[in-house]
Image (cartoon, rainbow, N blue to C red):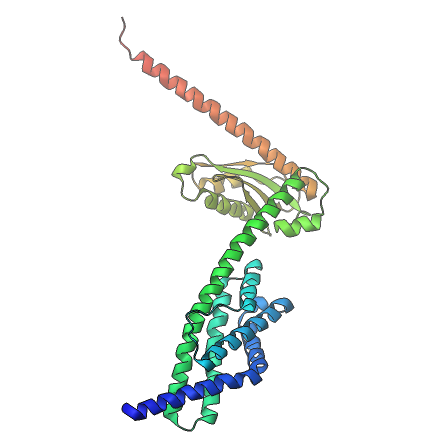
Length: 332
């Protein structure tokens, strides 16, 4: 199909796009509610969260409104900005540590459902299949362009908010831990929420470090894995708490049942599997908030003893080497 006939179909298709886009203003709430329900069902993390569901609706409604408004008047999409409700929804997802995959999935599913709805609307009002197909193609191209631009913007907002949120949470977590260890009067329940760790249980305190971090790949990651392995070895039924102190040193608390100390041989077996450059200082098991503090203090003392002993052994080794070198000199 070429020439005047093709031009006629293109004009009629553009007119149909404008008509369909304009008609959404009276159906906007219905379309947004339909999308909200379907998207919420596809994102398990949102179920039961009234605030997030309301924000999802506001995001959907604003995106649909902006998209069809621009489609109705043939406005360029290269300068479109993500609607504020969509940006706020992305930020709240980041604060709840819901994966950005859920954000992108919502845009992909929303695009598909809107195009399905548009196809139904076009089929009901346009008898010419050629015009219907051309109009749907126009809307599909516009939808892809819109989703590509807006999803890039909201993901960028998500990542920015996630970094800010994690940094803020890390600061609060550090302050809470310092207050707990210093013996300050603290709301135990609030402390548990911030740390993500139960204080009202038995604890095994650990100080872990890598002796040669420069020669080690991902020392903190290795220490984190070691803490988890120790938890499994001692039969812990809950997640441990691991708090890095620098690039090669970390503190940890492993939940334990009862008041007995773990078998040293079992801990040694776990240590052998992670390499000779990793060290662990272990405190006596303690219970409750005071036990959380006491087992940590004991682990710190053990760590200090180990470090001092290692320094003395290293100094002695250097002296012996110098003496051996001197014996090899010729006599005068």
